[in-house]
Each structure stands twice: as C-alpha cells, then as structure tokens.
Amino acid sequence: MNPHTAQAKIAFNGAQSLIGNRVYRLGADILLDEHVSWCPPGISVIQPVNCYLIKGSNGSVLVDTGIRLHEAEIIRQLESLLEQGERLTVVLTRTEMECCLNLPAIEARFDVESVWYTGGITVPRMSATPRRIMVDPGTSLEIEVIDGLTLEFVSPLMRLLPTLWIFDPASGALLTSDAFTHGSYGSSNAAAGLRKFQWFAEADTRGIARDVDESVRRRHVKAIGPGYGAPIVGTAESAAAATALATAIRTVGIQ
Image (cartoon, rainbow, N blue to C red; front, side, top):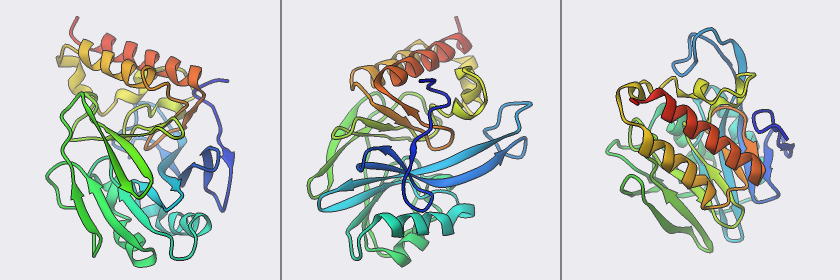
C-alpha cells in the first residue's frame, strides 16, 4: 500500500473509518493553492482537512473541530456517528483556527462535557469545562479524558506553537495535527509538508527528526491521521512515513 495515497473506508454521511469502528475521520476537502498558508509553491490540488472522532464505550472524543467552511458537514457527520445524548469530549491539538473554530456550533448541538487544550490562548467554548494541559516538549502524558477512554497526549518537538499529537493505544492511531500533511501532493516527497516549518532551515534539526521517527516506531502506530492531507494506514506504512519525514527534517536543517 502506498502510504501517500491510502484511502480509508467510507463510513457514514461522508465520515470515514480510519481504524475499524473505533476512529473516524471527519471533515471535507479544500482547494489547496497559493491562497492557503501551508501550501508549497506551485501546488494546486484538492486536499482533505480533517478532524477525528474516537468512539468509546461510555462516550466519544472529538480531536479538533475542523474549519468553519466545513461546519455543516462536520455537524452532519457527528450526528451520524453519535447516539442521542452521547457524552462528548473535545481535544484540541492546537489552539489555531483550523482546530477550534467549530467548537461553539458543536457545543450548541451536542453534549460537550469538557475541552482539553494546550497553550495560553483561551478557546472559543460556551459552557464546556476547560481542561488546559501542559506537556513538556519531547514527553507525553496518559489521561483518561472520558470514563474508560485513555489517550496519550504527546508533545512533539516538531512544532511552531504548543502542539499535541494524540495517540489512542486501543486502536494504534496517532493523530498528528499539522505534521505528516504531505499525503495530498501527488508525490512521496515528505519535504512538501514542511512549508510552515521554515525555521527548520536555521536550526539543528537532528533531535526533531529523531523524535518524529521514534514517536511512531516505539508506539507501533497503525495509522497516522494528520489535520490536513491524506491519512497513512498500516504499521509498515506509518513507520516508513515517519522515516521519510525524519529524513526530510534532518536534510533541511543546519548540517
């Protein structure tokens, strides 16, 4: 399977199963071109922008909320996947617009109990309990975010602002926010996903590269779900993608 073209199984109302009936990919597509800040030069393709629902026995966790352009689609997808009155917790990988701006609309429609996030920015919530968490870069914490559903909050070295990658040990899915985003560019060039990390060119990136590779390999990740771009499905495919991204990060840094 080509890790850069792997297609998840279509599930309900536009949502897609990333791993079985445990993790679903929500969202819709955008035209990725020069008007999008993370677009590499000379690219014009259709790209998915994603958020993810992790289903538990006592409720579900929504990782990020998608962009405002896709608000109606994401609400419909959640309606198709959540039972009436099902408990819902939101985890934000970053407090940036593509991660959090649909939170008020989701709170208005569903029973959102809490919102987990990192960084110093106040999220646009209404009544859900805020759960601000700090994880030292290069480390992680396991947290039971809803009864019976424990996630690992990974603080990667690959970042601009405070960022969390979310690992679900039960499924093996690693949700990587603004990393591993190169799967829509029609090539296997992992460097295409580094557009927003231009500071790498002025840094010794060997530690960052090593952290990316080890974060995937030591968890035996079965699928990588980026915030935008095609997901990567399969243990071998995920490991290969981590090695390719680590190599690209190491190459662009100061030698």
